[in-house]
Length: 208
Image 1 (spheres, helix red, strand yellow):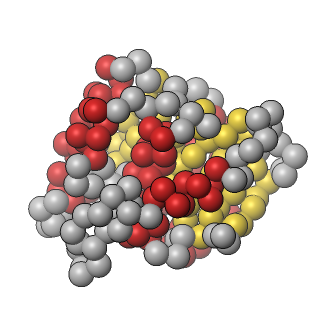
Image 2 (cartoon, rainbow, N blue to C red; image 1 turned 90 degrees about the vertical axis):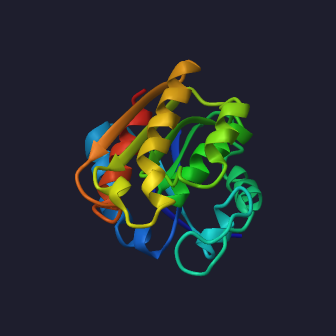
């Protein structure tokens, strides 16, 4: 079972679920405060510590894109753990995350209809095969927030540099299928203000 970090009102009807690594957790309290200030409603944020980022959040195997670590196929097991936290049908659940966790959140909404909205901040939609997966399957949520830093598609890595085109494709695909969707461009590269970007993502889906 993944370690969880809980913020906000445990009795709230609105639950935000976020897979997170050490980098995310360092800014999670600020993220929570930004969401609380923006949405003006009671909610609980549950962050789940991901131990093996490239395996636990990857929907299928893929070769390494940066470094030497390949991507695994542990997303199914991770989603199963998350769904155990979403058993109270009287509550409304949203899922979101940053980078590969944002991609995972999108993928999760194709696998289950538990989540009312997806907050995908700077999602790794460059992930091999993901655009084709979206074309062949129907997402099971009504609202998706997408964002990207305006310098992210200028990455030196040739695969990661496709992220701009892929996030535009994602927005177009979802919009064409009637999903309420927005694509917001943030200033900077992939590593700028992840907590702020994720807070904006969750705040939007909670209100749409």
